[in-house]
Image (cartoon, rainbow over all chains, first blue to last red):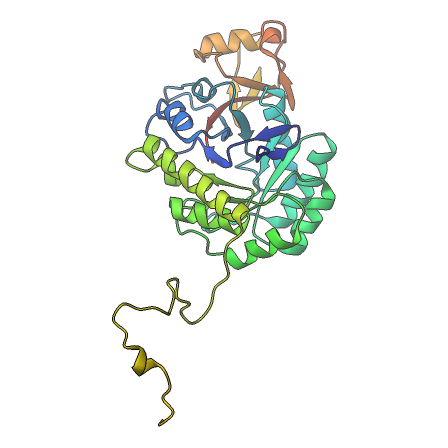
Length: 268
Length: 65
């Protein structure tokens, strides 16, 4: 059997659970979570230093065989996203970039138009661009033409843990785009992740649900199992649904049936 | 001279980036320095002279999703 790999840019991933480094109670939990979940891709953010806080280098907590996915959080337009992406690459984070352009601070909805502009520029500069978007099929096609390596539609608002509220729109992307669809944001439980994978998502990105669980290490493992289960189900091709019951056991040869009552008698 | 450090205007008596970081007690581990829009590699920090009105960004990687 050939290995089921996800190819993005010049890299291949055998694990389809992408994780994030935000919101962990302690950075030391991150390598434990990575080991337990098997995640091979993890996001980081770039900020101005906080000279009042004790600073740990978050990169020291990420094993070298895990691919870094810096995000452009904090960017409010394409120009700022491009700037942050260039900083990340210059700082040695590699060519992957998650484009995140947000102006709506209540729901943290991505600005699809600015995201497209940033994708066009960064793809030309050789980045492996993963844009975080509202699921919108025409936009996804434009991102494909612009050179994105995947699209990352949200399931629900960032950190909300509400699951696949945009499920039917994500399904349109999966069915009509050639790009891998990686469901990002809103996945709150392993069952949400499994559902996304069953639908044919190429991967899921989970941060809050793992980082803020009582036991992030064990939750990382739980998400890994769910993603593997969902992926295996997708590859096995799900059986169809029906409105009425369809018996799984034979409807003949029951132990207690009286054959004479079942067979139509000539009298009636 | 005055320079803009992370968006804040500050009087600066340090001649180089390295001097400024030492004076402020900022650890160099994981620090990303951008001067007037260009990333300055750590090896260059002792050599780059600061000028009046320079725009300096001192950045690092943090947890994020």
